[in-house]
Image (cartoon, rainbow, N blue to C red):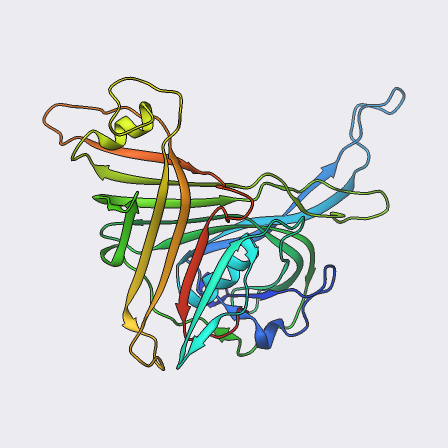
Length: 337
């Protein structure tokens, strides 16, 4: 008998204390539906070098220190995605709540440490159930085409794992609606872009090799320089964006040295309303990057093709008083798991 991947489950829970698996993960965590993915060990079989007098064959080996990492791919649903946003960015003040609707705001944290997650991962219906402690969101990626779903990929690094855990019987499952490209908009400098696709990436660049004498596990997971990038595909309707990216200004006719930094806003709403919302309110998310610099690119022509471009750019911190980016979500969930 085999084990179907579709019978598995993954439960995320914000962890209160570093080094301690969150005890209420099974009841207070959120179960995310996944397209694919799992965490796996990063561990080596340590083979000794050849020794004089030791013969030609390898005669022994040991197992080295270990960490766990991997990616989960998913369709973005608001409630579970908020837990990943909090872990990736780090700052989430208390939401504002009206009748049945909670508005959550997430911004990047300036703290030396980002929130840890406890994760329960069950493979198949009963193949194996793991509990992971001290997990961090190293990378978070979302993307959508005009005629597709809003999809995400999260890269996780975990410090500790135990196997043979008891699978959560009835975790809170995120059954909120999905987002589609027809309900997604992108503006740059307050001008709506003729976007065919977009993607956004948050990279925390965690250092994941802090192994110490006397232990199998990572001693600490420390985030390094944060990078937030985005890209979008457009059908060119003028050369304004190209001039901004290459010359530094949409009005320039020759290269300059300054970078044109404008606000980038990505919004998404569902077709469905939040069930208990009064007045009627859609699930939504709005991503605002106050200063976004376009990467220089080329206008490319080919045969009778309509000229289209894939444009990349970098989020820049305006000042210490202004966050690099802000994500605002609306949901019926008043707390982040």
